[in-house]
Image 1 (tube, one colour):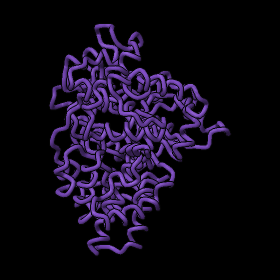
Image 2: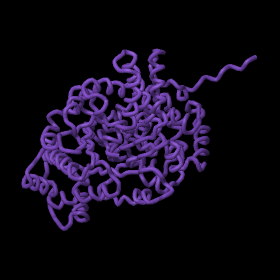
Image 3: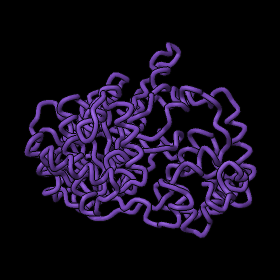
Image 4: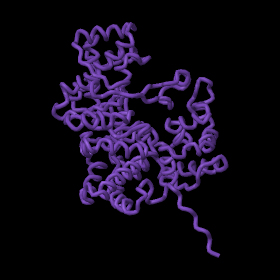
Length: 478
């Protein structure tokens, strides 16, 4: 008797994420084939450059795929598993370096059904299939078997970070870096003739601009002492920020990234800004002072970008560290940054009055609030030559949200005013899955326009190459 056919895994299906209608799917398939093999341009992410510089084997499946990825740990935590059982190293002392990586992996596999329908579940399936060659669905029963299979893969030379960088076809990978970082790993990679890719630092000054940050005062003192060129006070603070930005440019940086509470911008005169700065240094700043100072410093960051050419990206609208006890026990970036509504139109007007038409200034505006896509971001980018619309990120970098984004902004701003895909990931092995997801969604959206006779198929082939490849190069000056 003939053997029953083994069902094709979801992650291996060639038409995954394409439209259900056969005619539209045919067009999407053709469009995707045009960009499937293009190199990955990743202008914003959180992979540590030292991972590639040192090129050490990844330690184990849990350390690679679970613990560092708050997309993953938050889902498991919501299902009732404490974070210290996922390796996050809580105050109890049960996590972190002392955690049993196999036990963490068992928690992950037991929780696998919770990921159905989530973007994280889709990416993880793609990683299992296309990176590790695994077709088994994780479960409590096979957790150890999958752990051993991935562990064996991680011992192979082909799974060293630099080899994966090459296999993933990554051309540009931007990191996110503290302003006082010496950027030694970036320098070593740039000087290494055996490494062909570009790993670019990104200037991220949040904890030097937000006076509510618990380390703001200490950070500012270090900044002025090390980079203030002998100046003190507010003048030394500005000089130090300008100097460190120049240092980043000299080391290949193309952008400065700002994770702010709101997109508010404000221009203060130097005397008023100096008084506010000194009040903050003395620990006497109010909550209103915090908002005013951050708004003013975002204006100053725009001024500096006009002068030094760094692309300015703005990520507002997240209530950082929403659960106080979790933050105290586990620290930041542990899955409880929660979005809230933002207002862009009035908030960025002071900045755009002075810099919105400045030559070669690029301002990329992101949001976690979908309501501003068509109401504010698309009209802003549809007028100001400096403004680009940041791709859906974080909770919105999921298939349906990406389609909603493209539908919301394109009719007003067209295709040319968007940033290109942003993977925003700490999980290195998820990079190709995330970029392929974006490419499939762009193909699906364009295919619908072709099927509805709104654009020609030839033009759609040109547009998908522009959206996937030319846009990030153009917007981030690569």
